[in-house]
Length: 259
Image (cartoon, rainbow, N blue to C red; front, side, top):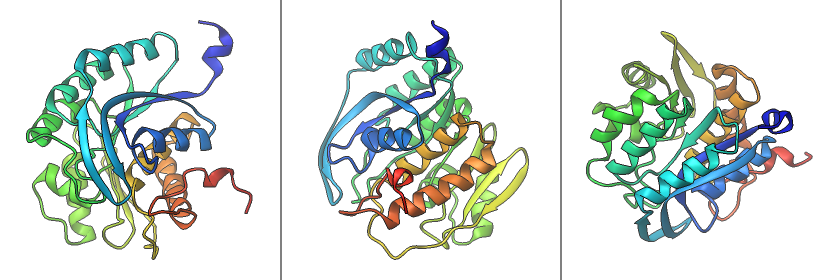
């Protein structure tokens, strides 16, 4: 591999396709590009959706997903990458295996339900996720509802967020986003709790916020920020993306706009 290629910043998203572009791999790619990161993508599922509804979803063949990953890793010097919708237990197992095989640092967004309420995973998702993917993740980025499902604990206060983040952080790092509460994110890393100050914004531009946030964290890590600073900068990024959004989606290119 040439020195020029080694010096390029690039990443990979392994996720589903939202053809309307507000969530999934398109949102991930836009976020990477806004941070100066070359984007590659592995499609795990194809949906028929827009910001208001999901009418259909189908998973990609398992061998094809593996071939997608191998073809990308054969060329691009990827260290940090992210996952989104993995849809089924067999895809989770495959992706976990490839993360370990290529020694990737994975930012894992445990997407389960679309903003419109559509279940985007199979019945065994949580069990398989906890058994395989969590232990190979660098950081997981659940919202409150996803954190409740994974931990089987109810979250009603920020103290609950802290307790669940601590529970989920073994053996990885965990940040629980606070968009469904006071707006503050809770990061648990290296045995320490960090409250990342945020604010609730009166906006409907929330379709794809989880995808955008986890892609922003991935991008900041690639840009050599530590984990805490990456989460802080991503909190700011998603806030401005929501403010500048439209059609119920964040605007992932806000970082390139001159205010």
